[in-house]
Length: 279
Image (cartoon, rainbow, N blue to C red; front, side, top):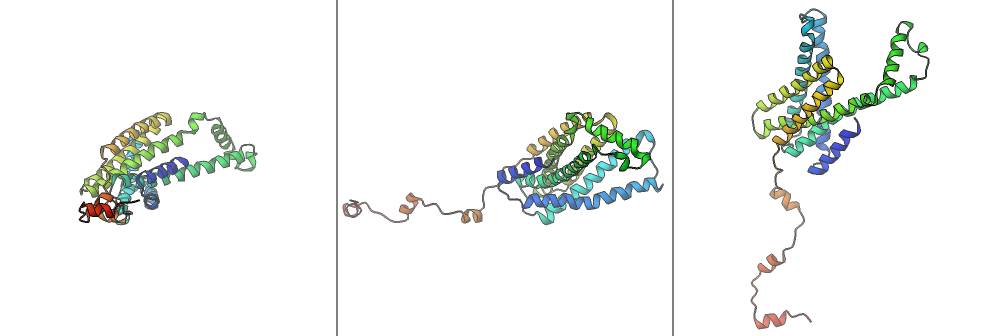
């Protein structure tokens, strides 16, 4: 979860020769979006708990929650992505730079979640052989023992689900960054709305799948969404622009012998040939 986004960013920055600036901007964009997104979710869902908004019926609650969470994530993250393109990453107007920007946006999310997983792992190592009765209240002891046992008895393939999900999510974030870029390169705001809708759909489907069919089926569905994201990325691919005249002027000059000779009128007379002979 930590290594994959770093490797992706290294590859993309080298592939498109863009440097790390757009990676950092993408990472900062995600963090700033969560500064508003997380408190908004806490406030909005508290309206149901306090009775300000009516609680949906039990049979529709999961669908309702999944849709709301998806829309919230789509609005906050994609609007933040749009704002960064418009006011911060003004030079990110090519397909390659959009991928670099997206690697930072999705990459920092993966790194943060990976750090949390690593912290939990260190905690579980610390308490694995400890006497839990000295660490938790008596009424929570049985639950704590069950949680520790469940953690260490999980199958190996279950322990890598987080990494698999982050790999799929990285592909999604690349597709979302390419989609939002179209609002600037094609000059129409509908591409932002498409990105919001795509984000909302993927997140809502993930939440509903986990709650209905469990994590393994959910990851399979998210994998299909990653394949669709890959299709979006390459469907919107544009050739990278040729270097501008300014960029070409900055390149070291290459001497063209033929052109250099052509700059002077050189008459092949017997006298000139005799003067230019080299012994």
